[in-house]
Image (cartoon, rainbow, N blue to C red):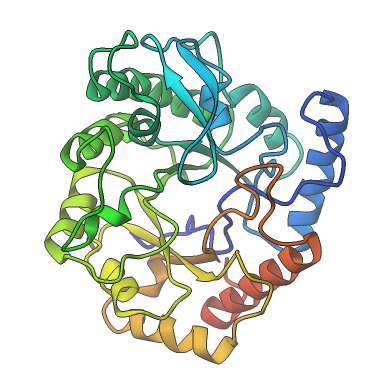
Length: 334
């Protein structure tokens, strides 16, 4: 798929929020977003996001914008506040597109938006007996909402849209983890519905991040099933540990898909050794066309607003390193 729209220097979407920023203060959020755009341009990113500053966590774009969900006092195993579905969801309007249009107006760099995948939301919010007959039904309703939102985002000028499903890579293991409320086959079918756009305008990429870390071992047949099941253009894959499983995930990717390698660890402040990272990328180049590639951190820096993974300065150093690695790979031809 090599062309001029690979958006080489990427990040997942969330950034460390300015101290004291509250989502309840829209003027402060708008000012912080403007500063975040300038910050990303200074770091020479090839895409810009709003840092997820207007949202409580990476799920909020959907959960805050549709009916049918109830926030509980419980937390899941990932530490996120648990929401439950009490009826099939309905969107009351755009989820991100209204903000994305303003983001597009701030810069000529490609705007990016990140959404939780419908299968992930269905797997983590479905509870039997609360008004929804099955997790699959919930997921399909969410997929329709997300697909409609993707179309709105594209019309608003967004050129890179990423869906996050942190559960799926654990399903590519020979000993798959518990899929929760939505089995692997159903999860693929649901997320496939969300990315199935009839047209891709020039430069538009629908990206998919299936998890923050690779399993200890990859079942290549299951990985191939993952890629075949979801028709995303771009796959954002963990690549910061140097494991055989990470390499296998890239190797299993069809040649007609872009890949974005998460080459720096967004959870630790220590900087990666460039020569080590480049040797890993060189290994990918033995079986993939690097013109179809991009680089990014391994995950978002603050997918939960109140729990940033690093300090703002550590984040800056990581993003500078990503930019440096991109220039080692592709020179200045972005």
